[in-house]
Length: 439
Ligand SMILES: Nc1nc2c(ncn2[C@@H]2O[C@H](COP(=O)(O)OP(=O)(O)OP(=O)(O)O)[C@@H](O)[C@H]2O)c(=O)[nH]1
Ligand SMILES: [Mg+2]
Image 1 (spheres, rainbow, N blue to C red):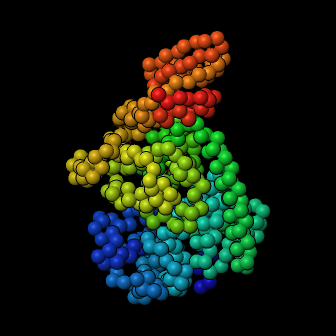
Image 2: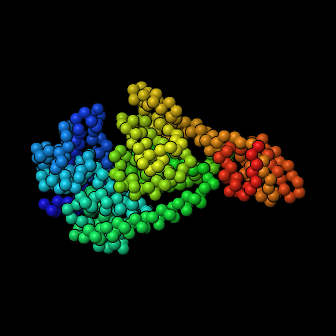
Image 3: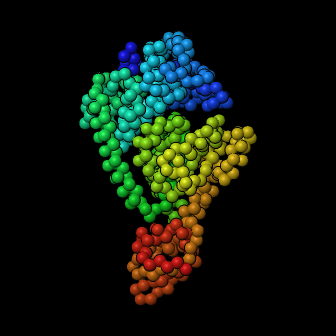
């Protein structure tokens, strides 16, 4: 039995999905409770062999669904010749152990599945370390035996390449299985935290270096169309795909709005409901871009039947990472494929301020750009400043951006009086303007 959770698989795994829903509580109203778990499982590269949806009156402390149901699950697993069971709910280590004894294949919960997807997708060192940390903190106590990359602690983070052989839930952390002393795990956790903190510091310095720019960050549920929009607005060429968590790292690009206005646009990891808490914590640095943004664009997949839940999940994560009070522009994306009426109408009623766009067809992207340009400029202020005539960059910036410019030369100096967006003052200072007088 101990072998259950450490077997190695080369083949694509066959999964039985299980959703247990408390009566009168979560998800009873949905048409298909397992739709998202299905997409997540496929994203992880497994096949769906069968599904089991179950209403329960209470959570059974030892098996979540109760012994009888677990026995029925075992039969399903045998019939479907499955080698993994994936729960839509999060399970305690004890529940996983009990369930594995009954169903005789490895059992994963939703968070482990998400962590596994992250492990196979993480590309940058930072993302790999973050996933590893989250896995050590979350998955580790749920394994009957441990994984192995700890044996080559030096080469860590590289565990992701093990994806092909480790099988769902064990990837990213190495394929060879061996017993590891908890002390070693704790040490590894400490080391990871230290290294991540160092990366975090570098990131912060990087962000600090972009202080003069107006920063915009795309946020939203996974698969909402963030990367597609990023590509439509800039020439970023980021990967956009119809699968969950196509993007794991943050990309930042300059985005030129009209009138020479330049902002920084960042695309980042998508959110998902019940995002594992450890993952949120360890992805804080990746999400630093959102934390430091002047404006968030919340991209919503308006064609999803779960659109309201998805909006709520994103808001919850935003609050968790300290972005609850940020300026947010809501974008109802995929408007090229929505069915008018019904859900879409209620969306527009609930969020009348949201802009309907299509990142794919380009619908309303001009309007979006204008909207953002207004926000970037901020309220008009009337200013006067004096600078030396050699300060070419500063003077051309003003000529390009300011309204009703008045220049007065005296010797080597020029005094400029003009109107400018309030938010552009920081940029002026960065370009060397010292004495800006507000009129
Ligand atoms: N019909 C339609 N499809 C879109 C639109 N925008 C994006 N998509 C599709 O939605 C899927 C996901 O798009 P992405 O841009 O990768 O989504 P994302 O939000 O970056 O997703 P993650 O990186 O996985 O979080 C892709 O198949 C896109 O082609 C749109 O406006 N209309
Ligand atoms: Mg993306």
